[in-house]
Length: 267
Ligand SMILES: [Zn+2]
Image (cartoon, rainbow, N blue to C red; front, side):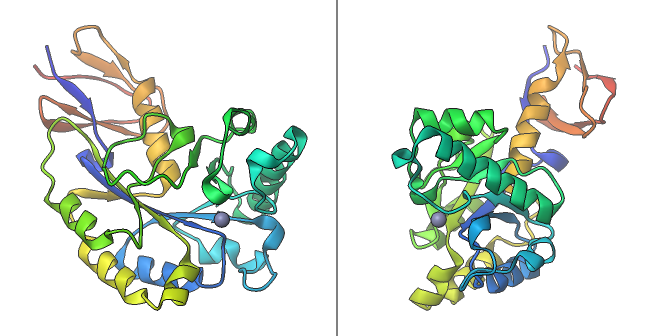
C-alpha cells in the first residue's frame, strides 16, 4: 500500500510564516524587509485604531499588506477574558467587517490581544467564522498546530531567532512537516534598535527551494484541503474536491492533485 503524507504546495516539507500585531507605522519598514526577501506573513490589525497615531491609516491597508494576510486583532484591543460575552463577539465581528471592507477578502485569521483566551472566547471566534487564532506561547518547536484556534508560535523575534532559524534550516525530517512561526510587533524593532536582527533573519531564511513562504491562513487552507481529499482505502487513487491543487507525498515523492481531479497513485 502506498504511504501517503500531506506536504506543502510544491511538494515542500518546510514552511516559514510570520505574524505581526497591532498595525503600527513600523509595519511599513517590516513589510519592506519581508518583501525584499520574499518572506511572507500575517498582520493582525486593530481596526478601531487605524489612522490614530502611531497606527497605519485605513487607506493604506490594502496596498501596504498586499501579498501578505490581513487578520483580526479585535476592534479596540481589550483583554477579552475580562469582557462581557456580547462585547467579545462585537470586538471580533466589527473588526472583521471593518478589515474586510479594506482588504477585499474574508478575514479569517486572529491573534489574541495580550495572548489571553478562554473557552468562551474560543467559542465566539468559532461562531464568528475565524479559522485560526494565535497565542503568545512560544514552543521553540517546528510542529504543525494540533488546534488552529490555539496556534502556538515557534518564538518571538527577540527569543533566539537566529539560532532557531538555523536549526530549522538544518532540519531533515521525513515523518513531520516543519513549520517555523515567528511573531512580534514591528514597533519593538524601533524601540529596541534591532532592525538589523530582522534583516539578518530574512536574509538567512530567503530563497530556499525547500521552504514554502506562506501567510498564516494559507497554512490553514492547505491543511483543510488535504483533509478534504477522498482517498481509496488502499491509497491507490485520490480525488481532490477543492478548487485549489493539493500536494501529497506518495512513498516519499511529491505528487500534485489538481483541483477537482481524481488521479491514480503509482504503487
Ligand atoms: Zn496586540
